[in-house]
Image 1: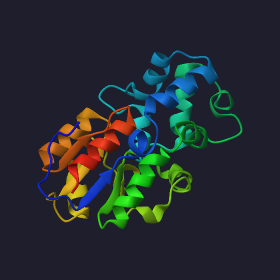
Image 2: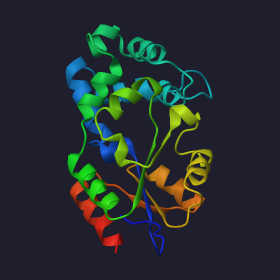
Image 3: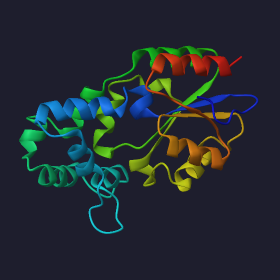
Image 4: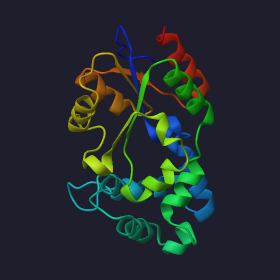
Length: 214
């Protein structure tokens, strides 16, 4: 649903996980079935702070503070699994990104918008070691810029992340941010961006986006 909409939109900024891909819960549900652990346990293994007052391992991985090997070690210890149990002969990033998959209809819409003259970008909490994997799933030339948490060492929903995004796009006027996390939308609103909360029904969200554009 639309939140804050600029009068004239010239740049559309996509989130990766949950907008360009299927909702993140899709990956967690699939992982739950594969490793025989409850969804709540998986979420806790990824998000519970490593130590008092610190980030959880997934957030620390996205911030560039942990390597994939270090984060996976924490996941496995908490879930009482071996790395092989978690991701087999592949890396965890390969398994996780394949499980999420790409929403091709959303990419097709983005391609059409780019052809129509809109500037397009990605603003994502992501992992440096996964970059070649997820870029291989999309056409990297589709996006004029990418702000990746693991590169800038800042994560959504911090205001600092959105200030970095504003710097990349030369301000917030005319820029529409798409994200599936309400807390990210709230910070983007406060930073002065236009925003659209992307729902689990991506068909409906694409229609919402179309209605906002001339």
